[in-house]
Length: 240
Image 1 (cartoon, rainbow, N blue to C red):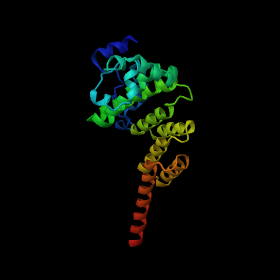
Image 2: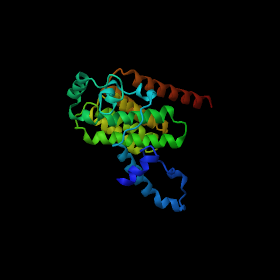
Image 3: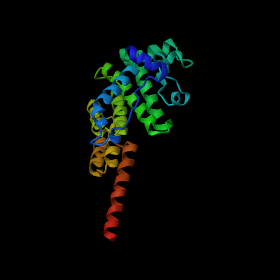
Image 4: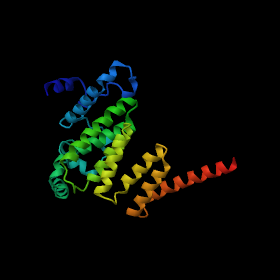
């Protein structure tokens, strides 16, 4: 991995988006290199799993409380090196807690991409990095890990933001298979299908979510919005 260490001297060791696939036409010679670029991005994302990033205070305020007690974070955040809290979270999460700093890094990448980055290339760069971090922990976690549905949902949402909707839907469905009551995955699926112009599927996922987790306000609000939009369309068609 010497070539990666050489890159890390100059660059933030995270995947760099060399160009967006949509920029290459069907006849462009660059199209030939798309698989190579994809492989490089995936490799860099994986390599980032072993590198410690910067710690932006804005991002640290947004991540879960347990992150401060994970590896690397506990020596960076005041109060993180607390043996009792580390033991408590280790007991709750088991051996996977040893890897959760990668999930916390992935969340920081996500918040940076969605809240703080100012250009499309930076957003893609950080979203790709988040996928690598999430995958690292997902592959280490047992099937019954308490935070696995959440991690799959975050990964699915970020894949959708990267215009990889079908892959994102697959991760969201996997989260539901593991924990049918995890309403956040239903909400993300509904949002995706609504945004892609399929209100019928959006409604179906909301109804499934409310069946599994009744009276969740986030789901009922989305369903009300869908119904209101449908009524407006009906009224507009009658007015014509």
